[in-house]
Length: 123
Image (tube, rainbow, N blue to C red; front, top):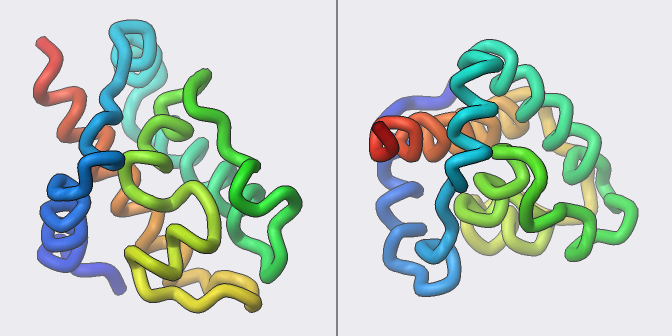
């Protein structure tokens, strides 16, 4: 089970990364996320992460996550959940094997916490 403290700590570390801290949700992304609601965006996050980085050897790993087009895509880059290399480096989840349900749940929680923080920052 993912603790909120664990998620807060990783988000704090990511804020110190020059690359990761450059990402933010556009007005269009904010409007989309608000229109769809938290539950739907969380479902999208689960589906997108499972499909793009859940496998042991994801297709096009390192290039599979667009930089824009959905709030979850932006969040994946901001939270280092965009490819298995970033997941290994920042979240210490090894490459070369399928993500467990708990690992996927943790990564979704990180993405959602980042999105929720972005929504709080945009009135």
